[in-house]
Length: 331
Image (cartoon, rainbow, N blue to C red; front, top):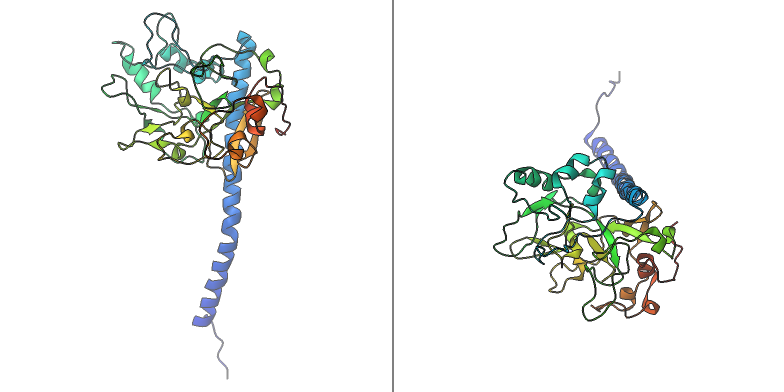
C-alpha cells in the first residue's frame, strides 16, 4: 500500500526558491521604473506650481519678481545676503505667515539676516524650515544644510535648501552685468530689474523659468560646507547669484564636484535618469533630455560664455527670453 507524500523534497524547495528569485529579479526594474515615474511626476507638479505662482505674481504686479533683491541704499554692501525670487512668491503659495516673518521690505530689511533682537529667533526658525514644494523627491540629502559663507560671518550657517533654480543667463549665473561688458543676464530673472512677460519675445511656451539642481552635484569644501547648492529663500551675497539662479554653463547634469572653477555650481542637474525637469513661462512643466544640444556640448571643457547668439544651442535658446531663436521642444 503506497503512502502519500505531504512535503517538498529539498530539490523541489530549491527550484521554487530559484523561480521566486528569478521573478523578483524581473520585477525589480519595473518597480524602480514605477517609483521613478512617480518621483518625476511629483517633481513636475511642484515646479509647475512654482511657475503658476510666478504667473499669479505677474498678474498682480504686472511684472515677474526680481531674481535677487540687490540693495540700492547706502547701507547695502556686497556681503549682505539677499532675499530671492522664491521669497517674493510665498504669498502666492499659501505661505503668507512665512513671508510676514521674513518681511522682505526694502524700507526695513531686505537681507537674510537674523540679528534683530526681537524677530531674530523667529527669522532663524523660518529660514531653517523646509517647504516641501521646493524639495525634489529624488534628492536624498538633508533638508537643512550648511552654506558656505565668509569666515567670522555673523550670519547663521544652516538654512533650508531648494532644488529649484531660476533661469538667469546663457552663460554663468551672475547677478547683474558681465565684468568688462554692458550685457545684462538674458534669462527670465536677474538682480537688475523685474521683467514682464511682454519681454519674452520668443514666446512664453518656448522659454524656461525654472529648472532643477541636485545637491550631490555641487562642490564641497574641505569642511563639507556646500557651494552652489540652491537656498530656499535667497542668496549668500550679491555675487552669489548661483544660490537661486542657474546659467547654461557646462551642460545638463554636469558633475565635477571637485573642480576649482566648478561650473556645476552654476548649472542644472537632477536625480531623474537622463535629464531634468523644467517649467516654461506659460506655466507648463517638461522633461528635457541631458543630451540636448548646447554651446557647451559642442565645446567641451570651455569655461567662457557664448560670445553671440549665433553660438547658442537649443539649451541656450530655451533660456534666453529674446534672442529671436525659437525652439519648439517644450511639448
